Amino acid sequence: MAHFDQPLRLRSGAELPAFDIAYETYGTLNAARSNAVLVCHALNASHHVAGFYESDPGNVGWWDNLVGPGKPLDTRRFFVVGSNYIGSCFGSTGPASINPASGRPWGADFPVVTIEDWVEAQARLADRLGIERFAAVIGGSLGAMQALQWTLSYPERIRHSIVVAAAARLTPQNIAFNEVARQAIMTDPDFHGGHYYDKGVVPTRGLRLARMLGHITYLSGEAMAQKFGRLLRRGTPGFDFDIDFEIESYLRYQGDKFSTYFDANTYLRITKALDYYDPAADYGGDLTAALARAKAAFLVVSFNSDWRFPPPRSREIVRALLDNRRIVSYLEIAAPGGHDAFLLEDPRYHAALRAYFANLEL
Image (cartoon, rainbow, N blue to C red):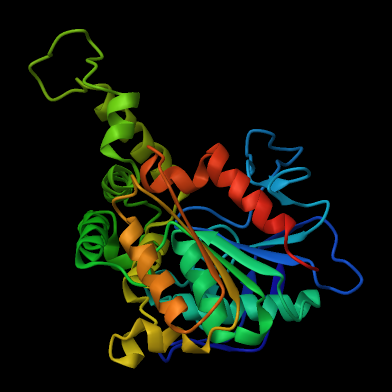
């Protein structure tokens, strides 16, 4: 855990007087401090990127198949930093943290944060760790947006940006999905305007629905068909509103599990950060102009079954970078996993990342 007493001014105009960042590191920082790689996580993950704790061996890092000794992002060669974003519920300062002004949890008073704010906080963490420049910043989905923003906020402090399963801005359809999820939470009777901590309750029903909706968008139709088909749990229709199909059971399980560990106020803020991100907004919608200040080399990866962030959104980034004569490699993978494919161990995907990291000069 890193504590920072210097205030963090947010894009919204609000200010955090002090803040904590939860982080983990893997591998060893070399003498030249040139082998550091920042891993940025997506919506419901954390700084726990790889491995497990002796006290909790079942809690394996969310990208353990990618990060570790001998893996594509090899911690025998690289010093990997996993950083938890501000506003999270996994250790960094967020809505459930104590507001120093009141001595009570921030709750609904915690400000809305943005991807730009996260990059600013991560830069301060890098300073604390003695990292002047990252060899690479990598992330998938929301994490990939952070990897892209690093090249804009701190173009001199990043050599390579690896952008996986992402977009430079959400489509209206994606914003719509996020809004339905937020409404599910905010209309839960236990939400209490975001101050449910004081009431000793959790808006469980809203969180369950938000997760169920989100999970539908993370999977492809092909993946759902392969995994669940139209299997009936009871063999025949029950002619009631209990669980009939396996997919119903799966979604309810995911919703129930999510509601036990994720914070509703965090969910609201993270989805808003997704909605707001648009580096081209200050350039009249011109992504080429927005990315002109980037100096890093790029690897952009998309998956053909990802209908939430489909390949055309990645190709928009690639075209804008090529228009600026930046060094960019693009990989479009045929994989059935949908948006979640970036978390899976596809051999072509991992082989490409392994090769890319192996060719980084330190």
